[in-house]
Image (cartoon, helix red, strand yellow):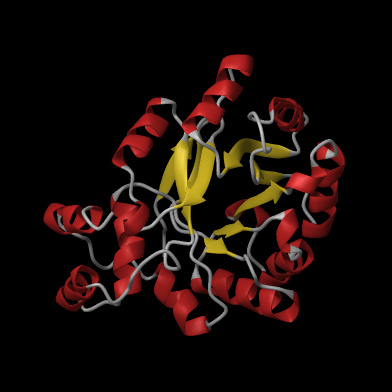
Length: 256
């Protein structure tokens, strides 16, 4: 299966569907990542805060999938601010790789935009420790502070995204800045029993969860569903045998 991608700043291709690993630990994390790679995922999302980088890295090595075929994201947890270089070096050791594809500031500081940390991220990219850098849970104002101060824009802003959280203005303004919105917790934030979703699912012969994930794809929003169940892992990637009409996409947009 070939999964479409979106292009980040720097002409880096990010597969539009990835595998999230939040709340997966130990053997469960290892097994889930192995199954995801076997199912065809080529985009893995982890974080220092998740405590599973060792398992993600081991699963990638054991999978037999070439490292260069997999887009790998990790994140800097807030308590490690001030220790950025040591943190990414530890992440690389745990993951067993010489660079990640995307490194994110997991949360903005309590005040401001985290400009000193952003400068350290720029240095890490320059040093070849990560191909791209970005942020997570940032507002447009905070992103603008980083851009205004350094002239360098985050490649990605990873935020909660689901039909109930759809924000056309935020999406348009992010795209004006060439910042890709990436959605996390797409299913956790969705009412999968809503008649709009169940009705569309029935018409296409898919599940409401697949409708929500395909809705992300229709909008060009990379999405990182998470599951530990093999059947669900495979189902969450099985999104390219159907498409939503413009009318169906608009119906889902209206759920916000």
